Length: 182
Length: 166
Image 1 (cartoon, rainbow over the protein chains, first blue to last red):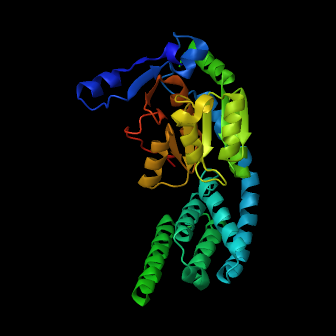
Image 2 (cartoon, rainbow over the protein chains, first blue to last red):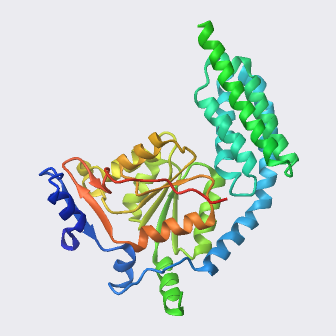
Image 3 (cartoon, one colour):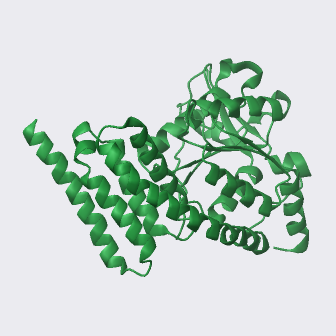
């Protein structure tokens, strides 16, 4: 590493401002492309549309398979709400894991609304108290919204936004009630 | 883009070795398929941070793409260990580490930056976002800092997460 290290321009600027502690070194090394193709490598100005087309085609190929998997995952979510409310820790963990996968993947495969509801569900679970789990209603509303987003993809975006807002209000109200009670 | 540049571009991707650290089977399939469609020559997959560290030491990849949340070792801890000065031969200050995460909160992004993550990609992933991030990671000169405890991208820099436009 040392033989291709050099002081960076950044180092000069920060040092000039007196912001660099004495035990900090700034180092610049050639890009990976330069290391592999030589110092005369010139980075492309824009993305190669052919590569982008191939990538998008790959996503489309995987979409059908994902849609089938998603349907099965939503059915599983519906089954997991009840045992989760009854205290089954494995069911809770599985419910979060499935929601987390949906949050990450649904948008990529053409189900952006599923991704948004799953994101809301994940954030709710990440701060879930025992009372929230036992109540189960917020979980159920989320899972129903996810199912509805898949079954009715043409839903007016305004309605979707209102559903998301309503879920947020429900979460806030539930947690507000708990604070007042506790 | 002229023909020569496109050719160099394809040649570069063909020579790249990428380590994917991801515990979700669906996400693994998506990433490996997208990397293959970019023409990336060699893709290695590890299921969590600990296996990622082992694969990193064994394979010496040019680039790491990692999930954030994994068990038993997550992508943050794996990154911290790769950037730690006291990790000896396993330490590496300049390998680009792209973290893909569903957590958009500033505290997550800041935590990732502080561990030494190069770029932070918010889910949902798009083809364009992944392509742009990889190209930026491999085609720009790499700047890093060395302190007694840390060698990696400056933890004082601004790191804004990449978001899909759709």
